[in-house]
Image 1 (cartoon, helix red, strand yellow):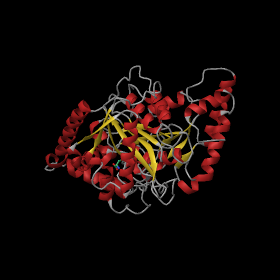
Image 2: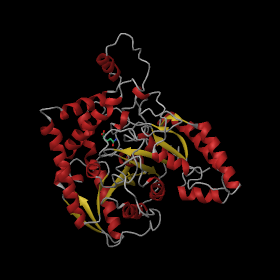
Image 3: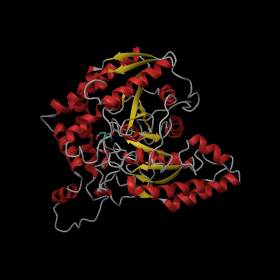
Length: 483
Ligand code: GLN
């Protein structure tokens, strides 16, 4: 069974009766068993349910009953997105045994369309990190070389899709968490416009900047998933109606006559040579297809890492206050503790990165420092938004490498938070301004490690963003994952 096929290919095989949903799920589970020891993408599997669901979909197909659009495709879900039957741990000891009483809206939508959730995938604890090393369950590994990080925080999403352990995954992107693993694992990852996809059931880290986004091997599959998950949700007042947009239709419209701005602050200092070369090559391929490329300067980007970590930590410190172990958590033995001592004992069970963020967040919000840090960060955010609005008066898209450097070895940077934070320089602008951004696999380095190219569009321009990404994808011929 070829597990590397795209969603469209899968649909045609299953409709023609060449494969059954059960066979495909069973082969996917075999693949998971074969490679998990090397890559560790999953925290929890749901094998029996997945097989039962596949059988019931096969029956519906035979009986010519209504079937959902996904016809049994195997999907993995980042473990900070709630699923009613399977635990949602956020890769934290604090939620190790938490089973949500409801499905996130994106999960119910996928289930309604007969997607099969085969398991929940790894992340940095509460999605705080860029490598998936900050998981309570241990790091995920890059399928292109298991000694290297897969990116993060949605590392399990990137790994499971890249290693053919599922067809599609959902991740969350607060500051690049869908795009970073997509880039490091040679798959496609989209951060939609803020408000396009419901966050209901996504465990909040920094609610004013994060979105759930699809990860897949092909741009067309990302478009396919977006068709199902986008749109207004009465449970999430920040969502908007997407109207009648079909992201799959006209995906091959091309980019002839479009203007693309190369973001200078994302391509100059500190960018790896091979990453720069790949960016230049992507630009010349897009020019060959009829796009015009000009340099664009967005000087507020130099402040973006500081602004992002101030805002994200501030929101995190407030969002994570609910983990007091009274409503959900693990058995600590309450005997003998006075309330404050109890809560601080509970919180000592968070990992080091989460503790760092909660402390930093509480500090920047505290009286006396609020104006100096939090308010200033919000001003940077407003300045960025106005620079972005100006830029999109001149160009249709912006382009830059997704990550400034190649994947690095597990353990190499884990003790250096600031170095890790600085790696987000190219991704966080989209979160702070709300615009959509996508990472498209573009090249493989001399060492055999993936390089992704990032394209940004103006808010709610996902359709043209996906068209540009598809055009770029069609210029590449990348090797298969060596696993
Ligand atoms: N690396 C960033 C952080 O640690 C992004 C995380 C994310 O997008 N969830 O906050």
